[in-house]
Image (cartoon, rainbow, N blue to C red; front, side, top):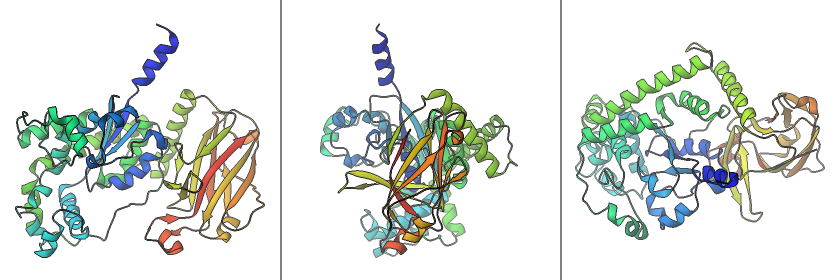
Length: 439
């Protein structure tokens, strides 16, 4: 077999990653973090079954990253690639209350009018015949679901074209599984997953994900889709949640035990322990990432980076599109520091940064820029909040392994809503469009 054909065949068999987004488990925030590690053209844009109109067309894109509400086994219908699976789980009591609060808040949900019109309390919501199903073993049903073996595990909204494509699997021939069978399927799903996290240890979960994926530490994240704190949950409500979620509770207990074991294994591999500080863990994860990246990638001599490409770095918000420029950009945030990693051969480099917005002109005037933690001078012929910035990176600042890490520190961050009168609560500093690195 020709060598080029072998390489092509191997490339086609590379896995896709699937984040199974169980509703109300911080998936909106997590997707922002995960998306940064994939180029925009490699990410399937649809996140709901009702958005999928043509399965053949979706498969033809050969996406590298699928994320959304497709159920534990549903994503297999969306790609020819083998799947590496990821998910996040949540305490059933917290999950149930979050579901209740979401339905009360969002007018477009199916039972919103019922919940508001009848002024259902959380306690009532948990046992009402029209809502109890929404807070009963939701995680187990979600992870057990697929079109072939457990199509009745959850409500799935399909477009007419998708129904036609999947009709052989939706014929109703599959027996309805018991809750115990679904629990065993969900448990098996977790055992086969590349990674899963538990929401009450979100930061630790992000560190374990960085370790598994050999990514740099993720840095700060702003919790999106998060609303006011819930009131104290009554003993009656708590008992009703447990009555509704016996198998979800078992699954969550199992997930917590497994996650704890996996996290301790990671710490041991990094020569750390559970008393190690977050700073020490992040430093060890950074070295872990650098060792593996340097061995597995070819160093560049020139880079033309735009925000549609994957991002290795910390403290950046989701990519956004400028229609007029046909280009992507990202806001820095939610902290005053941000960074991007590039991997280059040892040379002297000239670096050009294109910034298209900021909280203020004074923020950019005082912007501090670093190369591998060394402060560097920069210049610009522009004023205002749209600037092209020039700086030099001498060969001595490039790490021996090829890492060229550009760091930023701005004087403040502020909610986009406060700064620009939007309804966007993200904490932002400046907006980056492009970076060019050349000799």
